[in-house]
Image 1: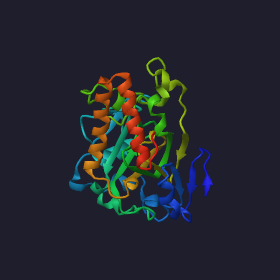
Image 2 (image 1 turned 120 degrees about the vertical axis):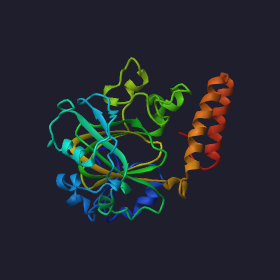
Image 3 (image 1 turned 30 degrees about the vertical axis):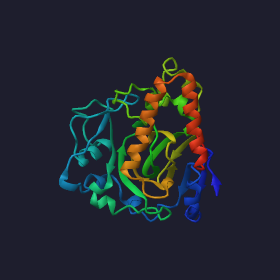
Image 4 (image 1 turned 135 degrees about the horizontal axis):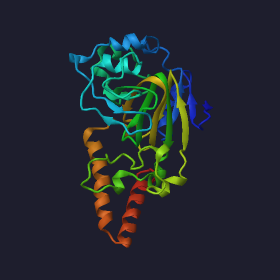
Amino acid sequence: MAITSAGLMMLDAETASRFPDLAAQGQPLVVTGAMEQWPALRLWDYAYLRDAEVKNGSPLPVFHAPRRGMPMRPLEQWLPLSEIVERLWNTRPADPFPEGSLFYAKQRGLQDFPGLLRDVRRPLFYPDHLVEVNLWLGGAGCSSPLHFDYVDNLMCQVRGERRVLLYAPGQGRALYPAYALREPTDESTPPHFSLVGNPHTADPAAFPRFADVRPAHDLRLGPGEMLYIPPYWWHHVEITDGPAVQVNFWYSLQYGALMTADDHRAETEVMEHLRVLLDRASPARRSGLGAVITSLCEATGQHPV
């Protein structure tokens, strides 16, 4: 087992059988050589993706930014897959969008693309705790805001390159988590997102605690490489070389069984209800509630973050 330049443990096809035990420790991992049997690695080029079948021929939701460095917003109009691919590969004129526009079709269930689904292989070192498998298509400069996932995330890079910044769960306070700081009635920012948004453009006056934060890991993910991100690990993802194509698997490994929708809902409600209680509580009561949470974690064999 090797260590990457970003300080992450790295497995290859021969050592991937150790994955479940290492993932149970709650640390990110890089896996190489485990996608060699994926037809997608050799097939997914411009022409293949442009002509890929979409269930019911439906257009797709797209995030857009007029130029690099600007926030990505959902387009009101959905676009056919063929047009998204043509714009990502710069084979279609910019109109009606500005020259240099960014397009990001993200988190689209791969089951909506029957042909593409046949070109990927479920990682053999994972148990059957699959929650969802998604397709991500974007150009250089596209990014996802800083956030964490409730479930285990396995990113599988097919084309292009992504830079991933990883922040440990214990760094959460300095990352201005929305679940702790947004108004209870404000639904514009999901609770698992950071108010910082993009770490590269964070305003030090607005987020002074973040100014001194450094990611636990900073890595580049290239074709044929997988990155495992445990639940509650914060991450910011930016495409550095595009067009980039990625498949990600969401699992629920750390529950020991499939995480249900009720489990997901319960975790979110716990965070939101605690926030309301702590806002109302006196300092002494707040300290007492903190001790209760710590005791619960310790009593169930876990460590508080």
